Amino acid sequence: MLMRRIPSLFIAGTLSLLAAASVIGAGNGPDSDTAPEKSVPATQSSEPNPFAGNPAAAAAGRQLFLQTGCYNCHGADAKGGGIAPDLTASKLDAQQMFKTIHDGRTGTLMPSWGKQLDAEQIWKIVTYLRSVKHDG
Image 1 (cartoon, rainbow, N blue to C red):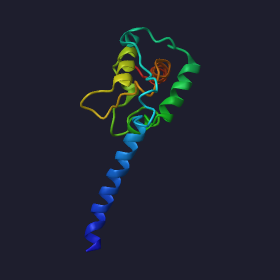
Image 2 (image 1 turned 180 degrees about the horizontal axis):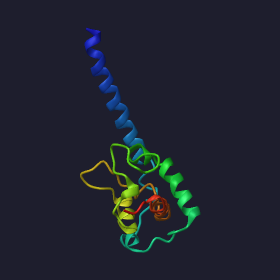
Image 3 (image 1 turned 90 degrees about the vertical axis):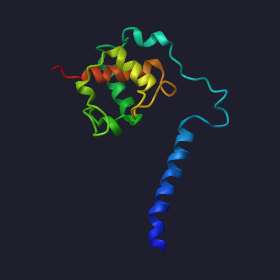
């Protein structure tokens, strides 16, 4: 009887952990109503990348890419991880990449990072992705 319940208990436990993690990560704590959001003006994604071609910004962007867990879906070198696309072959321009990171992509697993990352951090990630992009 216990052996039949183990898979159910495992699934229930996993779902509970995921639910708790989403609440913690979503900023639903007691002071979330007073914490300022890292909002980006709608025009931010239409402006040129202020860090384009900057190797130090690309290195910082790689660190942010790894720290935020982007590699879980896109792979450690942004070449795809089986879940999400190879970003080194992306056809998106810098502004489209910014908008995708900031807003997420509806209908996909790509979440919005606009509340967790400010514009400077997103542009550094874009700079990193553009630095590893291969043409062709």
